[in-house]
Amino acid sequence: MEDQSEVKVSKKAAKKAEKAAKKAEMKASKKAEQSGGDVTTEVDDCSRGKYGVMPIITSTEKLDRVLVPVKSLNGDEKGKLVWCRGRLHTSRAKGKQCFFVLRQQFATIQCLVAVSEDISKAMVKFVSDISKESIIDIEGTVVAVEKSIESCSQKDVELHVKQVFVVNESEPRLPLQIEDAARPETEEDSTEEKLSIRVNQDTRLDNRILDLRTPTSQAIFRIEAAVCDLFRNSLKSRGFVEIHTPKIISAASEGGANVFEVSYFKGNAYLAQSPQLYKQMAIAADFEKVYTVGAVFRAEDSNTHRHLCEFVGLDLEMAFNYHYHEVLDVIESTFVDIFKGLQQQFATEIETVSRQFPMETFKFLEPTLRLQFSDAVALLRNNGVEMDDEDDLTTANEKLLGKLVKAKYGTDFFTLDKFPLKVRPFYTMPDPNNSKYSNSYDMFMRGEEILSGAQRIHDAKFLSERAVHHGCDLDKIKAYIDSFRYGVPPHAGGGIGLERVTMLFLGLDNIRKTSLFPRDPRRLTP
Ligand SMILES: *[C@@H]1O[C@H](CO)[C@@H](O)[C@H](O)[C@H]1NC(C)=O
Ligand SMILES: *[C@@H]1O[C@H](CO)[C@@H](O)[C@H](O)[C@H]1NC(C)=O
Image (cartoon, rainbow, N blue to C red; front, side, top):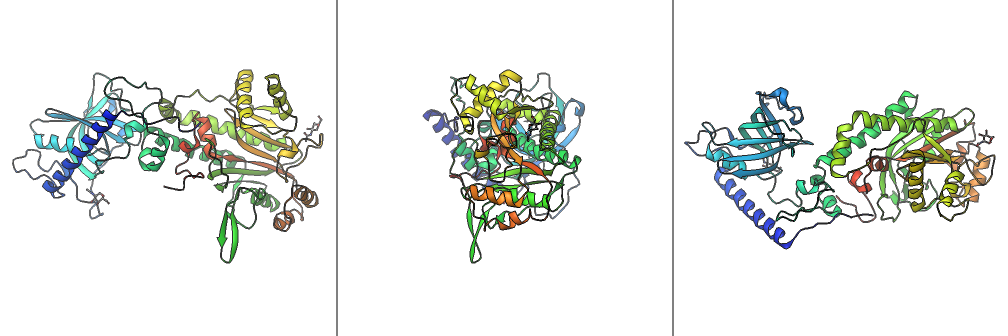
């Protein structure tokens, strides 16, 4: 599944790139010698003082200058003289002029500096020598263009440059080119000399700060922030309280396996695999409806497209009156709020991601489709899968089920209720109607699990029995079990993986694309 993209580069292209980088390096060192770090030196330069390398900003002065966001520049701003700050994305010098693209987050605009009465040849040369990714301040006139500039986000205008100052320079040699990292997956490799280079995942992650500069990454992490925001707002509006639970704990919350052990003064502790026990204790403490957003740790040696050793958990827990479906209704509505919010408020970001990684628009129903686990088994068996009633779903069967459900019901999102009891954690309430099953559920996006939840056992004696049945050490979970001795309302909840939701909503193929600095069994840096 992973690392489908590969660096495709011929020897010829590699040589060429090396030569260009060397040249740029030489140029840069020459320039540094010449300018000694400050502004223009030539005496008869008509652009004197209008370009150069700014002295390093140490906050010695406050400039009374408004910097206009690149994304705000369009035909309405025609004729205005504006200052902008951005990165030099690409540049192309030709004779007496230099075209370059200024990039600010996911906005790009074409800029032109051309020899004229007040623009010297030296200034054009200076601009064409600025290394890619340097941060620059430019002053320019907004000019409408006749032919739409397809390669930029600001298509109907360009900037005619009057002044350029380098705020902070990038080393000329970049470990990856932003253009390559941003290249659409659809683009065919051209047979021309200019080969289309793809950047493989490890190179991206090794140089994550550069990879994160691509419009796609900029969009992904805004969408991820929005998932969090929408989750919070949706639950807040339903009367939930945000809580913060400890991440250093004395006993493994989900049974013994897959837990990171850390030293804790003279003894040991564990990193929390979920806030499970603490959000339930918050219910026992009468908070009634709680949620939490925070890091969870899994010492699972899984090198797959969807496992991380550290991820962000969106967890909730809620007391209900008579039936755990009261909680299921709330969780499903929360997801609908998230999906709607993303599609309504983040259409530009979604579109930006889909330009590089084409996807089908995420489909969901209102109310959410809710199937029983046994229905899913029947659907799978009808399609040739052999499985027992009480078998858990394998990853492959989850995927297949997602496809079958999509074909039958037209949704990428659904709930599966009533999982077999034996595949769920010890604190899951059995189904009173059928002891093989339980009052537990998973939710799926594009055929992958993104939430797991259940009604919890809120009776200390019964909980102890179930814990022993699962081989848990009662001494280690004494505080948890004791919290059910003084009266607890019936309650249910669930846990969601933030990176998975973002990945699957956007139809991406790897969770490392939606984790800012991913942690997996092979990666602990940067
Ligand atoms: C850019 O940043 C580097 C590293 O902090 C610094 O050494 C250099 O002087 C800066 N250049 C400018 C023009 O501010
Ligand atoms: C048990 O079955 C009854 C009757 O079909 C149903 O109303 C109830 O919701 C079921 N209970 C659970 C926990 O599923």
